[in-house]
Image 1 (tube, rainbow, N blue to C red):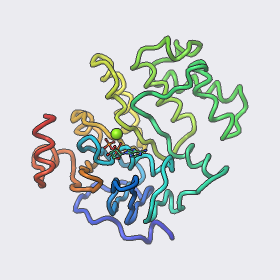
Image 2 (cartoon, protein in one colour):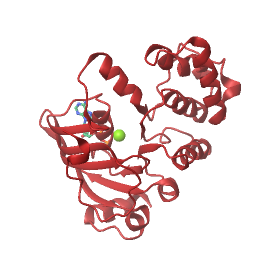
Image 3 (spheres, rainbow, N blue to C red):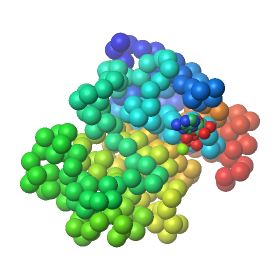
Length: 260
Ligand code: ADP
Ligand code: MG
């Protein structure tokens, strides 16, 4: 099915930057008895920054993981750029390259240098030469402010530096969108801002981003939309301003009263 023909999720929010890039239609997923995604309908448009917020266990990570098919869904449809997610093989590798993912725990390749972490995907999946991949990687490491760490191993870097390398690694694939799942939650407080600044820079640059985070400052500065999840459902969708100042649902009010 062509994503542009599917019904967009009802929303009165005017910030719609581009055409639909990610479309989730009636998506359901269980882990055994646990109904972890319940009838998810969502659209992320090209160039949009969507912040996903919600209590622990509400399905935020699963939502990210089904979009790049780290997890399968039981029913429904997910398309990226109008194409259903491929199930396997080379097409799946390309999907994963098109949908960059940054995890809470950095997940860099521990036995490879910073530079190798960033060049590996472009060489293997995108077919770049080593020279071209390194040139590009150094520019990206420069952009996220860690070019001087290129020869080191990940463990020699601070958490904030590692997470910036992880972002550079995702960017090196020239992804269509980036999913960031609580990218600052594992960081010491003094390192959170250096990562958020890189994320704001990406958002300003027009990158399509889905960001699971409770960093209200980031949401206010960079997000076009906030999606609030609880118990596997999208409960509320609003602009950051609307959501943080005037949440509509009891569950969102409860949640915000605990984190703010
Ligand atoms: P969140 O990111 O919002 O904290 P998750 O998407 O990680 O939520 O998890 C949603 C629910 O699914 C939780 O109850 C969690 O324990 C459960 N869950 C997550 N991953 C798995 C898995 N691989 N197997 C079984 N249950 C899982
Ligand atoms: Mg999570």
